[in-house]
Every structure is written in C-alpha cells, then in structure tokens.
Image (cartoon, rainbow, N blue to C red; front, top):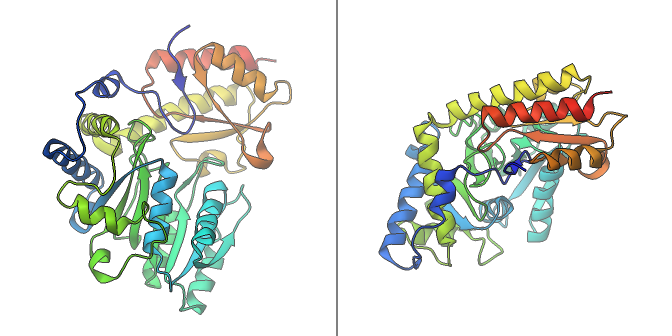
Length: 363
C-alpha cells in the first residue's frame, strides 16, 4: 500500500521537510537556543498576513487548536464582560460551552448547521445592546465545510465598535483574514492544519494593545494568555513547550513562505478542491450544503453519502488505497462525508484519489 494521505480537516500529511525537523537535537525549553527558536517562529506567524505584525503579537501554547480557542475566549472576554456567540456548527457551540465553563456572561445567536451565520440578528442585537463587549464566531466551520460570512460580521463589529474574537483554527494560512478591517482583537489557530505543521502547538494572534489596556479575564492558570505573553516577549515560556513540534512548525512556516505564502496555499487548495468536486459531480454525488460550491471553503468540502454506498464502505475502501476521509458529525453521521485538501498531496495522489472515488462510487 502507498503512504497514508490524510483528507480529514487536520492533522495533515506532512512533507518530508517538516517530518525531518522532528529528528533535530533534543533541547531544553529553558535554554537560550529555544528562546531564539520561539521568537523566530512567533515572528513568522505574525508575518503570514499583511499588516498583522504591526499591531498584533502571536502567543504560543503547547496544546491543540481547542486549547488556543479556550485560552482566547477565557483570557480576552473580561469577567465583567458579555459575549455574543454567533454559531452554526460544532465549533461555534463549543465556544459557548467554554464561556459557560468559565462562568462568563454570554448569549448565542444560533443558525441551523446547514445555514450561514445570522447577520441580521447580530446587527439587531449589537444596535440594541450596549452591554456586549465581544463577538465570537468561527471562520471555517468544518462541521459542514462552510466558510462563514466573516467579512460581513467583522464589518458589523467595526461599525458598532465591538471586539471580535475569531476561531481561525481551520482557516489560518489558507483563507483571507483581515485583522484591522474586521476589528479583530484576536484569532486562534493551530500548527497542524493549513500551516502544515505537527499537532501539539497552537497559538493566538492578539492585538498588542490589549495586554496593556486591561487585566486578563482568565479562569485558568495554564490557559492565561497574559501569563504566556509576559514570558514569551523574550522567548521564554511559563510552562514546558513541545520542543520538537516547534522545530517542525518553524520548518512548516519556512516552507510555506518559500512556496508563496498564504495566497499561494489558498490557490493550491482551490485547485485541488475543484478537481475533487468535479470528479464527484461526474459521479452524481451532491454537495451536502444546498449552496455547496459557493458556500464551501477552499480547504474542505462536505458531500452527501450516495444511497447506494454506506459511509463506512466508502471510508474503508478508500483507506485500503491509502486515503483517510472524514465522517459527518452529530445528526449528519452516516449521511455526510468530508474531504479536505490540505497537506502534502501530489498530482499522483490526487489522480489516485479520483480513480478510487470513480471505482467505489460507480453505480
């Protein structure tokens, strides 16, 4: 069997360059060499999007993307604040769960998981409720592969002068993010999705002025961004970092830069996604979202499982060929399959995938 190629929404198939970085020398996170490594990595993260480095700073944590989101939500929503969660999937709902666990005050504007976020309801709420300090939402809701209308939501945050906290875990490095234009106070992300690093390091890109403007709202010791930021300004960390994963992240970021940055990555994802979508359309497979191609990200597309093939059969037969796809979540289990196009995928890989889909899904 050929190598395993991951088509799930992270972790991704690693390039040889990134994988080899994991074999570098052992290093104590209290040594100057690690401080220099961390400063380099954080600087590279801050420079991914044009203009971000001028007003924002990256804060790194050892943990998954969820840890970054929880650190962002917990630290940046004040204990006396009020959050408005704009949700239409698993990950928007998870932000509300985090606020509940933290004992924070919040409200939710929820949409059906198959719909876009409810901008009209958001504007009505922001216009009428001056107590809301922060708006929270998910950029790429991988529950359905929908790329939410975040530019419009950001415009509302700008219009009504409300801080915006964005879950960019599945979009950072692969989709457009406008920091100042969207009134972003922070965006949470991770190494092991569009950046093509290894699971275990996540980060929050935070507006620099926030740290001096107010105290942390954290209800956790480990997930307090103020604590991490204070140490990381000079390259240190308050807790043990996953050193070898940071090596791999540095290599992934350098590789991304050499290939043309986030814009080139986005274009490559779009090209790959178009090929997969065209193949499945040829086979009569429908998008799971009614507004499928227009609504979906370049990164991941959700499809309806055809009546003549069970999801488990499709999954297992593709896995025999070296491809791992992703099931639907919650009410969509068994009804949906998702294909992401991140990571180290060659033209041969894509050709083999399309050939496998044709063979398995042919009537």
